[in-house]
Image (cartoon, rainbow, N blue to C red; front, side, top):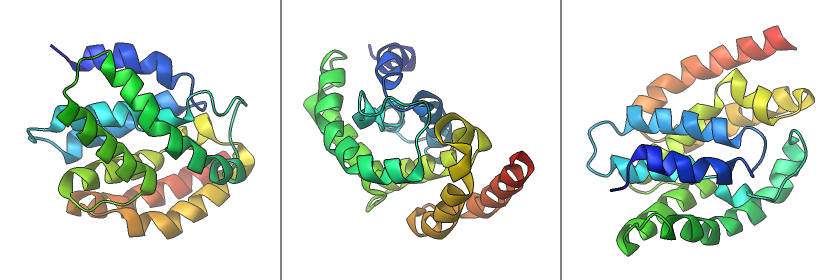
Length: 185
């Protein structure tokens, strides 16, 4: 039987090979998935996708913290790496072919920030909301890029969010993040 503890046991060491902060980010994404996807029959697959959605970054970036420019430069390669890394990881957990394909679809949606159906909307929104946390910036980005990241998210994120709950949460979270950035710089 696959459970969340087993996913964590397998996913964490792989995600620790990604960018600094990716594992902590994945845990925040899963927190939002549980909130936005509460009661769904496929919640476990969404949770699995949340834990590993950035696995394409595995062994791609070695520095302490990433810059906005490095993120933009390396993101296409990370997205390309996602599918083979996910297939490799999930084969050891005995997921069905159907479940693997669904998880790949969910991760692809998160990678592209595009969601057509509800389960994709949940993972994309969870990924976006998880970034609106000062810890996300502290763990992953050079302090000199925090304002740049904020301005980018302020402009782009509102276009990406699709669920009604996330739309209602976004304004308060982005305002709080701005205040925390201003107090930290």
